[in-house]
Image (tube, rainbow, N blue to C red; front, side, top):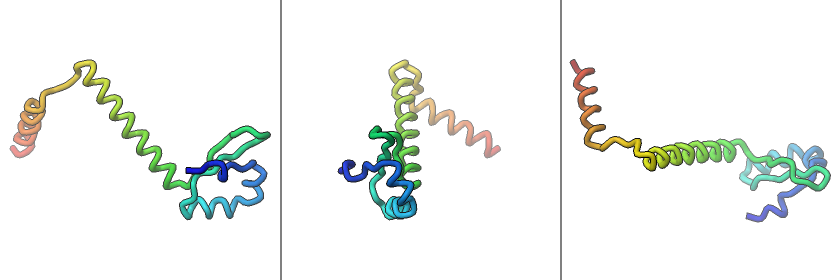
Length: 93
């Protein structure tokens, strides 16, 4: 991924917003916007943003699960299966 061509001043974005949004919608890489020579924001298409958010959520769930394992907060699979079977029997009655 080559970000150097995707770094633009905010004035460029203001002058070319429709074109930038169309490019992003067509799958272009995110664009880094600068102000006074400093990176200030990243603009990307909504699909990529949502995908990133889903990935972060999955990673958080994974990290929490690993933390539970390290802390010993686990239940043997056989116990879980038995509880699920018991629940199913209760709802079938």
